[in-house]
Image (cartoon, rainbow, N blue to C red; front, side):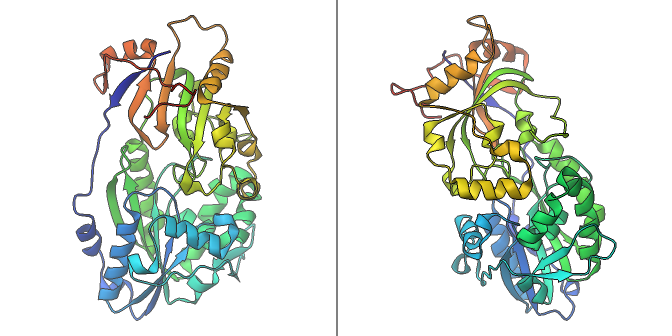
Length: 408
């Protein structure tokens, strides 16, 4: 099997001057007489997140405010204060770099939950501040689809609610995410502690396409439109029918589910339908990103993994994340092959009697970066009429002499 390198072209709207765009949106009237502002940060894999946070801190200081950062990431980082601070540090977010303190704690205060179906929690240090500013990317969720998915509303509820809130919401499964988060988010926004949110939308090439400071009383109305913008900007594989998808790496910095379920067409949550496309018979994953710190959440979305991947899994951290979510299918261990080449052969065999030369195989680096991919000859031929895909005439063996994946 030899694969052809291909360049996939996507629309690429980009914010040209990120710092200036952020700075000009800040208004002193937004903060009134407040003094201390907790900046909620937490989601992995956001392009330019350090620059965005640093400029936010600078803009707040220009108005005489005293910002500090709280990790807003539910049960991630092993559900410990130290672990969550380490996750932020892995993004480059530390006191020296962004210019304000990082206050990481798993302590929460319980707020009034009258009219809700679950308790309501808030990070204790954020609640003690005069105001809270959320920073998050708006994007389609990997577990469900609804009016609000990944974004400011979800961060306000689960991110700032820490592990207790994550457990309370996930107790209701997908219904908790789709229906209960918006209700809890509306309650939190009504309390007046959250001042505003900075919403980020990215393009298909993992670049900042839009950044917008939204006053708290406008978040519920504005976020759905930004979600649709994010959905239109998402990258996609160039075909719907695939025999084997080879994924070089899976990771929490790539997607909350390790691989973006919108890209691979698999959700693996009982009762939640898979996306209609793409339809992939077998998925191979070769490696776990260093930024995941052993958290292999999403390994159950694969069919075959390599020993290289398996040996990097921190099962305690992975299982804590999986059990909190309640989506156990995603934590099940696939077949483990000794090499990537062996994993590929197992995956292709599972596709049944495929005529040699007609194999529909794609190799990607990860589900976040799809501008450069590799295609089997049958798929390369199909791209002749696709103006958005440029395929190299030459091809190469994707495996090295030891059976590992050759450089991407």
